[in-house]
Image: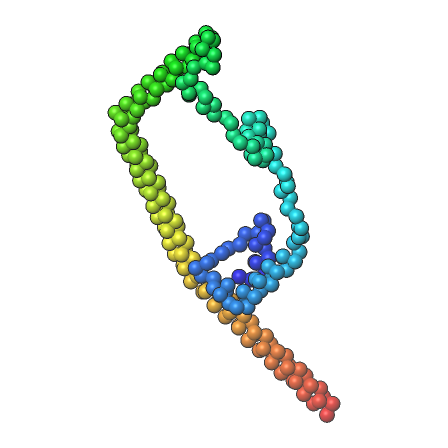
Length: 218
């Protein structure tokens, strides 16, 4: 991996061929130093922001007046008086001669009796069907859990298979790359040998020319 490839990593239009199972240049101390230097240079070019772009104050529940009022009540630390417990108390009117007050008390008593009857009915239903409903719910949760485990195992196996294929492909590519690298080295060596031979022949030709000139002068 060259420094040019590292610099191109931040560009979306550059394709980088990564061979993690073959390329071991990142284990080199010099390459690590180069990468750290490039990162430091990039961080120096980054603009520092002293304060965040996030808003300092956020208005919650702008479209819900009830929740907005509750937030304001909590900010002011006011007590919550949402539950009226007096309607659950069976009390008569303060004035025993108040007919309308007695009617309201009787109606309140009737509503309390209906509420208690509904509660008892719900308890009977819970006692009769609650256990079975809970078992069905647990069975559904166990089924969902089994499906999630199955899908997770399937995905894990797919990841392992992909990694095996990548390793196999890269290992095979490594042999080709090594062969091409050896050929490239051989060609470079041959070119150097040809250059040396050419230089030697040029020196020999130059020497023969000087010898010829000296013979002609004599």
